[in-house]
Image (spheres, rainbow over the protein chains, first blue to last red):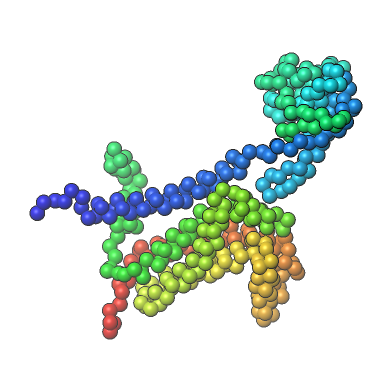
Length: 158
Length: 219
C-alpha cells in the first residue's frame, strides 16, 4: 500500500497545534489590548479653564496663575493644581505657558533678577517668551491656547 | 532546522524523554469523561492568566476595590472579557472538579494504587473552594460584603475555637480593610502556590502510575 502524503498521526498533531495556537491567540490578543488600552487613551483637554482677571498680569513680566483642574486618572477623579505663566507685552495680547520644563518635566520658576525661567533640575534656562536660552531643554516651554472674554482670561489644553 | 535544534537541545537536556512520558504516553481505551481532568486543568490555566491580568488594575482597599473593578469592566479595553473569563471560569472550576471527581468515584479509579492521587485531588478541591470564597469578596460590592459577612460568621459556629476562627478570618471583629487585604493576599499568593504545587504532584502521579481503564460490566 502506498504511504499517505499526510499520515493520520501527523494530521492530528497539526490540528492539535493549530487549536492550541488559536487558543493562545484568543488569550494573547485581548491580553495585550487590555494592558496597553489605558495608555492609548488621549488626555481630556477640551475645556476652557478660567484663569482670572487680565488685570493681574503685569506687562512684560511672566505672571504665575494657579488653577485647580479636575482630572480623571483611571477610576480616580482628582483636583490637580496646574501652574501657568501668562505674559503680555501690551495688556491686549496674551501668551500662556506651561511651567513644566521640556527637558525632563521638572517645574521651572521665573527669576525676576535674571529675567529668565530657571529649571533647578539640570540648569535649563528659558527667556520670558519661553524660548530656550541655555541648558538641555530641547524645545521652548509649551503654550496653551488663550482667549479673553470681558476681562477674564481663559486657557485651553491644560 | 527545527529538528536539528530539537536534537541539539535533547543531547544536552534530554527533554524528549519527558515529552514522550507526558504527551506521548500510552493510555487505555477511554471515553470523553476522561477529559474532565484536562478540562479542569485548562480552566485553572485560564484563571491564572486572567487573574494575573486583573491584578494590573485591581486595588484591594475599601476605597478603591469597587471603583477599580468598575473601571476594569467598563473602561479598560477587553476588561469585561478578562473579568468575565475569570468570573465564569471560577464557577466552571468548581463544576468541572466535581464532575471529574464523580467520574473517578463511579469508575472506582480512586482505589489501589491511586489512593494518593485521590487525596491530592481532594486537597485540590479544598483549595478551589478557598479560591471561590476569598475571590468572592474582592469586587467589594454589597453581595460580596454580605456573603463574606455570612460566610465568615459560619466559621464562628465551630465549637470552642469558633470565635477565634472568625477573628482570624476577618483580621478583627468586623469585616474591614484588613479582611479585604488578607483575602486578596490569600487569593493571589497563598492559594496559587498551593494549587500549583498540588497540581504538579497530582499530574506526576497521574503520569507515573498511569490512568485506569474504564471498568467493564461485572468487574
